[in-house]
Image 1 (spheres, each protein chain N blue to C red):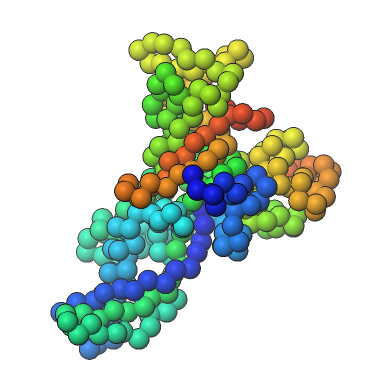
Image 2: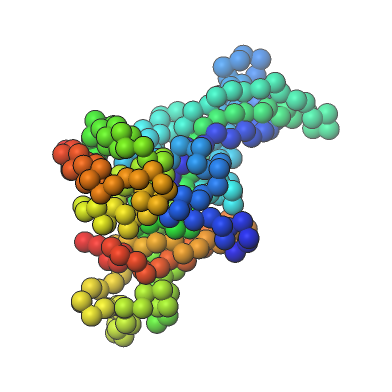
Length: 139
Length: 176
């Protein structure tokens, strides 16, 4: 592991400037996009298997299995709710993917929400989790 | 983490695919881009390449005199997956050996959870070996495990990441 990689640490939100700016996506969002792409590729190409790689297929399988939210409206709501809490993109997606149930669990999954000096107090995190739990998980 | 990023690539179009009718040329360029994207698999910087999402711009083509091929610069958005150190992810148990557990996590085929990074768990020998802890939490083939990424290593020859996982931390381990 090279020196650069040693410094990377997602728990402290050190993932490289390039990726802090990149848009992170939750599993449920990736599932919606890949599903649509799969259909498009089937239609537009004579030989779709040329354009649907193993990486594509394995990822689709994974995000479908590990999406808490399937319905496009619910997926939109999750991002909307989490966006109210001044989270970094990366933090937002980890929370949306893992759906922690308690404040302790949320902090264990995303330690940076406590340690980045933005002072998310426990009440704010609690409120965020209860807002999330109101969204219907499955259609 | 799944990421949406913008990339610029050069796409090579052979003379027989150069059609004066613009739409057909554009189609050739897109198809070529999609094929190259699917074949590239992954890079160290951007992670695994999932899918092109939108095409932003096709630039001016440059002719290569020796072959007559034309090189088009193409800017597009795509989805990738890159594992980050410190990130918490879920994986599916693929194989269990004495010194640890191999997990699959989306496009990453070899996430390794070493016995050293799950000190609570003991290897249980058998036809279907498992790892168990004192609270009878069980890691078996097919189980889903929540882990934290301890480190990643890019292997250029295989074009893939090796991921070292750990269960040292709260709320990590097998999940139902």
